[in-house]
Length: 374
Image (cartoon, rainbow, N blue to C red; front, side):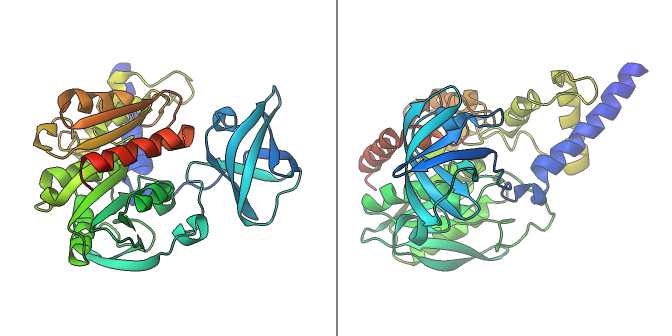
């Protein structure tokens, strides 16, 4: 009886947690910024970050990051010095007032704040496109070419998470549409109040592709981050407009929701006991989630149906990703070796491959665009 009670109560509890943290439309909202860093000094073109107990690993990884505080934003350009208690970075101000010693700040992957104009100095316009649930806002950055890139952000993220690639796409001659989809701020809500990880959201992407084709695009390149990668995969499998896609760029894509849930469950401890959730309890929770919320796990396994894909793919995956299991990206490469160019970035966490090595990332993107004729 104790075993039945453990799995019954535990499975019910964790299936509810799965709903709250990953299925409810409310969980889609961008995560609030946590100002967990302290700027210890600012001197000319350099600033120092205190490496206290709460300092994120990104503070000492090198690469390029955004630094945000309540009154401004900067780009961390280069890690100059890493000591036991401080990291010294060269930086460039982007907006707001200069920070002072003691200012609380946060490192971000998005780097560029606000919009393509404020963050990148690019001409852009706010547009909307009509989709199955209403009208969806997007940023449009024009270019002379007839290929458009359409950028799809991930869960608990925003359009800002995709604009770091916009300069490279624009320099390559592509117009760029950075889109929203259902449950985003300003976009229509899902009728059932749930996320479907591409099973319904692909229709919103199809509407964006239709908008591009109706406004001068001859073909498109799709860019998907995390859950956005799952939306792209679902679109490529289901949409009649998939032949218009010259190529897809995926960054840490959510290709198997079941594997992603299993991966995340390993990071959660049982209440009171302080030990990781056993795999058997995760399986029970997922079974109950099917009964309670109608989750079709097989439909959310885009690897299972990968043979339906016929589009060249450039795939970036961080080796230190704690959200998406790197094994799913590796599996897509193994299933479609003739289509997938796989770029592993060992030190990168979730959607951090660009931040770790922007030059390599951008060079891979430019090379890929040339290969697919974008």
